[in-house]
Length: 632
Image (cartoon, rainbow, N blue to C red; front, side, top):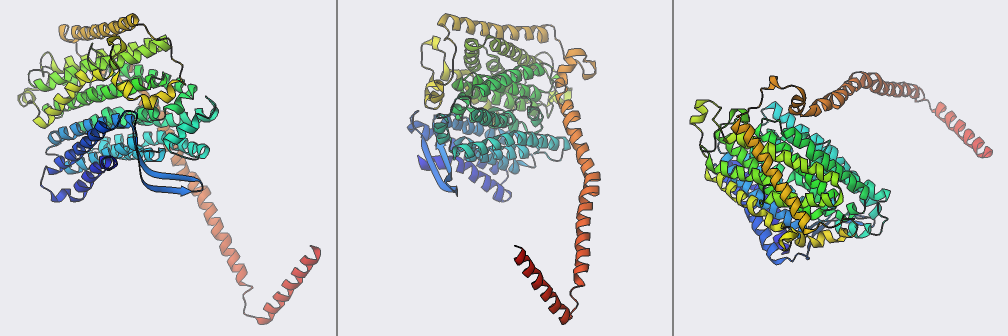
């Protein structure tokens, strides 16, 4: 299994090298299959290990001893346990489907080979992130996916706005990454190791909620805020829609934005011993979930609606982690990967059919024109809305149940967020697929279903979105929670450190599930009444006023950052460039040069070539030294 474990990240790396170095010499279109099959092969290796590796077992692979100084040894090592396996199946499985979809979506693009080269590199770094046995290995993957996201978001680099979006994502992620890096320094200084398993073992000997633990976990959480787009570092993610749609699916569904969730669950003992940090995580997750859901109500770009939906769902996952429900957070991460990847790829299929149109006000009536896309999209929308018995229903219900046990206010806010999700998702569905087509006749004439390379991933993800909840059925079904049981070896060490509320009775849990399901159905029916029965349409940009205008403009957060942070930094930089650099730095440098020049000219006077003068100087020097010796 060690060899298979090494192959998992190496296969996408090989795909990257082949496409990157030899792509221009290969037949056109073959690079897409090379990139896709390398990820499929990695997925097969994951399944082979999953078949033989028990839930309580782990594989340690030390490739070589990387850094040694003093008593510290840091290896280039990989670690595979139950949590790693879950993440590997999501990353390689959903990643392969996105690669396959990209073959059709990116067909004819001049950067086709470059696109698959970047995708393979992205998968390689994401696999390093989840397989790293120590925080330094995790950080390499962490930074690697940040680099690849910059390359992929700005893939169409001839568009200056897309370049700006890529730079924004890169810079905002660096803010979070600084927190992660500082947290690593504190871990290394106080524990003498970066090995994740060793750190957790040593941490249990510390005082719970100590300043050290709070400081380390808060710094690590800052990294998670940046990577997983939580308040206040979330604004890069909606702008990341500048990249090709498969990039949005890859970044927003199965990989990069889930890195923060994974890092916290992987370090669950550290976080469980810092209740103060857990409270911070809880309320930032809650605030992000409802804040992004409100913004999603008024967006008209099909990908922007899904982007704010991602931010909201990530907030829900962080709320679960803050409640100490680590396996519940991972459960929603998995189901979210299925239906959110499907939603983005479905949106890409719509955009592909409409030749680049993304404004839902110019869509409508598409359900008969692209039936496969319509059917899969609406099932994904039902799943994310919490429609009974679909995957999102079970994973959301589990988080809401934990919230009800521990904090009724948190439950109310998350319940409202879930209702908003159901409404804006079906606002999107009804405006896109129902009523009459609102585009031009020429566009309607050319609408067609996507090729099989695009529709097959939609169908597979649709099946997973429908049945994915079976891995985490609630206790009222009197069956084992498959995912929770599988993750026990990872989450059990922290279970005794977290105070959980009183367990819900079966009758109360059934009541809460029924309430959540009926509420979701009610919001869907309300959206249907408004956008199909009444045929309401989103207002033109200039006609929006009052609170809807505030929501439509995303509460002007970007504008606030621009005026309060970006512009002052630019002004300060300008001042340093024009005044400080010239009047202070340049003068100090010039004065230093002047002193050296004058000193050199003065010292030259003593080098006159007169031997008598040199003898006289030597005598004077000896006398001075003799006097100094007498005085001392």
